[in-house]
Amino acid sequence: EAAAQRLLSGGAGSASPISVAGSLDELVSKADVVLVVVKPKDAEEVLRALARLARKEQIVVSAMAGLTLEWIRGVLGPRPGLFRIMPNLGVEVGAGAVAVAEERDAPAAAVETVLALFRPLGLVEVLSEELFDVVTAVSGSSPAFLAVAIESLEDGAVAAGLSRAAARTAVRQAALTTARVLPQYADSPAELREHLVATGEVDPAAMKLLEERGVRLTFRRAVEAAIERSRQMRNA
Image: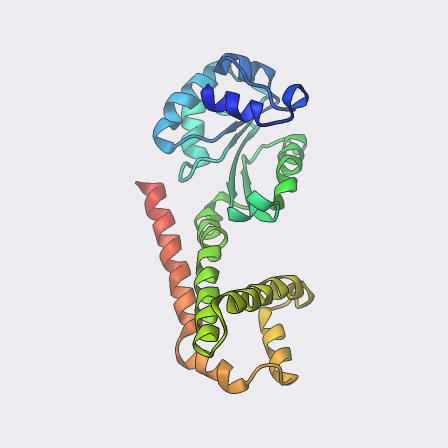
């Protein structure tokens, strides 16, 4: 309750769009969409209370890690407006990716409501829930994998004589540039790589070294390890 009050007071005072419900009953009764974001260990208790309070036509969206729609349905009971989402780090700055899994009989209007709700956070895509382990690994872990690449490039620049600040600016700007240019090469990032080599902006020997040292295979193995970890968490 104290945290909710701090959130409310941190808004625009009386003009804040945030309102604090005094109880779960009040919150559910006033909501069109209920977003469930609790730790998995607390999920069953919250869902059982929600099963008692939620209207049949009410949309329920789970952002709980590792809990499948089947498991949630077993506690909450069957309802067509049940969804599961998997956001990534980028939603914090409105440039994220949100995967959405829906029930097979989800009404079109409910699907559109959920998509519209999360579009301000970035790209939103409906996927089969069977792919969520892959999405967790690729979308969720990729920022960390890319951070390793960026850190390594910064270290290389510093070793060659740049200050850490200058190296950080140069490499991070290059990362931003790459992210903005890649959509022009929709078929494959390889097109961008080949273009830079063909125009002489990148030394072919440097690209050959990356291949010989197994950089591509290492990233692939990291993705596979992250997928396996996601599956282990789901089955725990």
